[in-house]
Image (cartoon, rainbow, N blue to C red; front, top):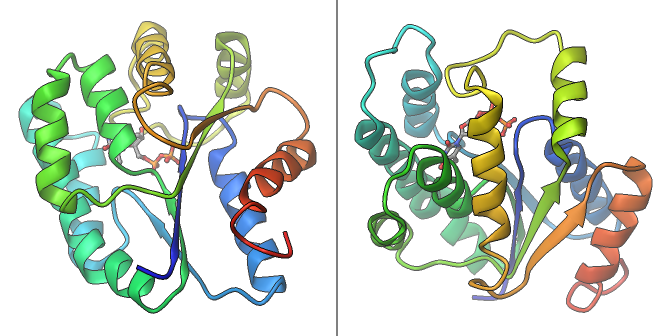
Length: 208
Ligand code: TYD
């Protein structure tokens, strides 16, 4: 595969999507062909699945159903968009990937990690990113940003504080398990965090 696959992960309000935007803009300015995708979603079918997953009315959704819907959305995205783009040599930037399942459904919903790993492996055909950036924030930053945020909370964002503490812990446990899984301290200044990410990527993407 000629392209480069970059994944951003983080708990809600971690500033992950801002970093995705900044990196994508920088890479395009430098002449790279970039495909941006988000999970759940990113294809027609996956966006329909996203609506089901996040719908506040679906209070009866079983955690296994939730776990499988994320994988269904992912399987479609990988095969329809990510693999073809990587074959064409593009840089693919994904806002969330398999690590979200391991952290939210594993750490948050307490589904076994082995089961989740098998599901991820089936859905993605074992496609792993070249780089993963986990934008990490403290619980204090999380609570503060959540208070400031005025958006309507979806089904998963409505979970309580201990859910997010467990999700964060599960993310941090992935550091030693996956190659190039970088923890980026995201409590601070946006531009500084962006530069740190570019520095790590410059080992592979020239001109950053
Ligand atoms: P989204 O609005 O895309 O959130 P964000 O901007 O934080 O990425 O909603 C996606 C939600 O789904 C988010 O709360 C994380 C959750 N999620 C999982 O629980 N498991 C997964 O595998 C994925 C991809 C997302």
